[in-house]
Image 1: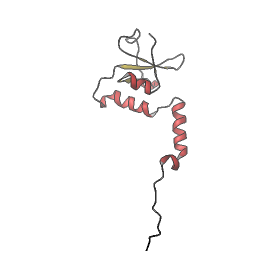
Image 2 (image 1 turned 180 degrees about the horizontal axis):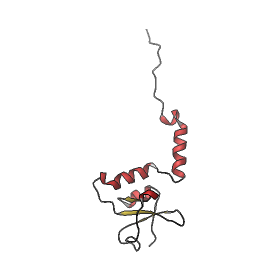
Image 3 (image 1 turned 180 degrees about the vertical axis):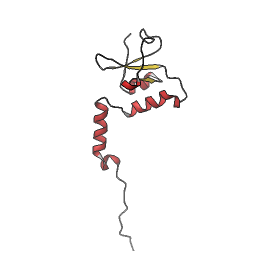
Image 4 (image 1 turned 120 degrees about the horizontal axis):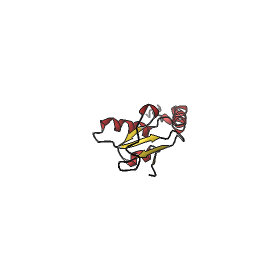
Length: 105
């Protein structure tokens, strides 16, 4: 005899909650915190054990996200204000992955 029951399969979160995924993408596109932003802030808090010296600054004039590395012209003058979304990065790659660009000077 053959069993006639159906094997329940798990559905992907993407299929169960498409609105959640769309909302998360819209939130990130609108300048909200993305997964890479969360990882960057977690790493900057010292949880990874490494020193995070790259400054992620948001331009007051344009809202552009720019990062500064030690040795650049305006690195020492750049202040980080986490309440405005600015943060520290542990690597240039991490900053690029979060959608920030390197300072031109």
